Length: 267
Image 1 (cartoon, rainbow, N blue to C red):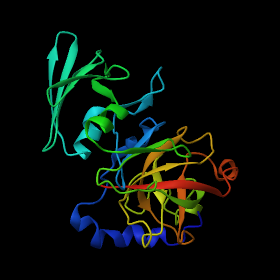
Image 2 (image 1 turned 180 degrees about the vertical axis):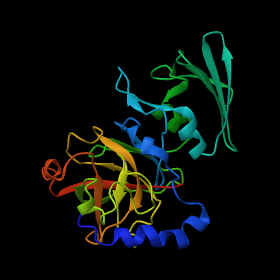
Image 3 (image 1 turned 90 degrees about the vertical axis):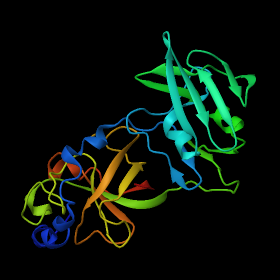
């Protein structure tokens, strides 16, 4: 990482960041352990965050999404109630009322019965619904970006490109020689962990939440990961991210330089 400025930065940051209570907002970097998003959903220009349940393709090749996270982005109020072993979900906004029950293909849109291509599901405490059904029921067009397994819902009716940028990526370890002599701490004073990335703050503001994919290295979550921009480095300039990976300097040399996709997530 060649971070010759981190030592001074860790000391200086207290005068500016600590006063705002920003130190250690991401304890243990546990956020990076979340399952990667094999299927992603974007509403207009915003990638939808799925903190504890991820979209997936079911046996019918339909994209199933946790209903709350997507529908709230679409402006729906979400209500649910338990009916035996099933969950009934009711969605309301200023245009539509939608109701469905987990395990069933039958649903209602504005009190009119309809049948989904595949049934809604309830698993791990979340109700999943076919994304295509939500799109049709809400009169919102959806497009598919095959290069990123990304479904884009155009809530405003306009065309939207995939909301990621290509960055050059490198990797660094906790070796003091790469961390200003201070060892396993990031710029914000947090312990280094999976999900720590160093950035150029003029390109990605410190504290930004990211989703990164496209890397190829066994020491990182397969497919992609949530990450936070909480570190900097003297050689990290422009569209470059430096990803912390547990291991020795020598083992991380295999990472080299890679091109990754970086999604900047809204708070």
